[in-house]
Length: 465
Image 1 (cartoon, one colour):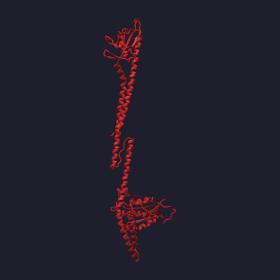
Image 2 (image 1 turned 120 degrees about the vertical axis):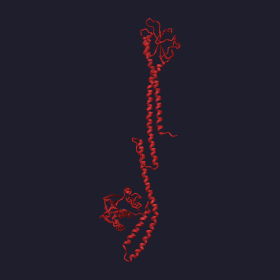
Image 3 (image 1 turned 90 degrees about the vertical axis):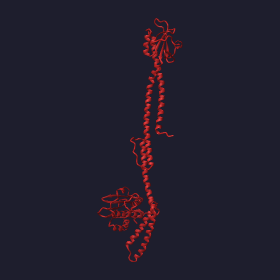
């Protein structure tokens, strides 16, 4: 059975408040009754004492005046229990049997009787003989029961009414608080359902800084974490899908490149007999590079157990790779400019992997300048520098640069501005550089696009091979 939080908060609070009010009412009613009786009893005892010690005759007018002071009816009787004087407007022709035959009550509230249709509390007092009266007389004191109850209600009902008003206020405030908490929890529940359906946008926070706001902050943090996780899963799925789709194609292309290289080797043997051709050597190296690239693509996402790291001079590696891209640059009428460091730049690296990164950046620069829509110099510059602990490679071009939609995600998988590109070159470059403890970044300044690669230098004592 569903029991909403609102009812869980309100009903127990109402029950406790009602029980407290009932207990307070019972105690207050009991104390009010006692205090009322004690006050009336003291008041009547004072009247009796005044009448017993007075020297003036106890006539009807005197007793009526005492009634105005005490609120009690007074009847004075002789030894034969016959009325002598009274404060009553009309004395009954005969006193009741309870008044004349019953023993005198000890207290004003220990006996009750009915007279002239009115119910009274009855008490008596013996007055001693005095003056010309030689016999003792009996004073009957009759206090109206209705007056007693009125006095008791005046003492009991106001606190009870205040308590009831406070109970109503407590119920009202508790209902408001319970409604607010219930509404807040419902909102949080709705946000969780929205997140469960794949909407990870952050929800507005409550204005009041309390536990509900903390819960909303936790929900928003969960949404952000899930959004990041979703993006990570998407990237992983993209890479896995690309690897699965490209593995078969890469295998066939590698076989074709191997066959082409073997044919060139046979042709090179014939050419060597007639003086040789440098272009054939470049073509053979390009084919070997293509085979290595296809092999690396086929291993994308798999741990490399055959990778061997050794001392590599970055300056020497760049110098060896430039002839591989020089034909493409000359064909596109693009100038290649190398500014090398005066000293070696030794790093500990997988030479093949770092070479792929450098070639990728150079070819990207050549393609960017080739498809540029702006005039001016058509140039790709390579600069090698070093700091105390890093070798730094800068590759800049005068192309148009990445378009705005891809600026922030240029290293993400399948993000490319090339019509024929697949968007994996820079992704793999970043993976290789970061696997070597380095950093890769880019910036656009002065109409040029510049990529920066920083790799940790090997220890200074190491020799370069």
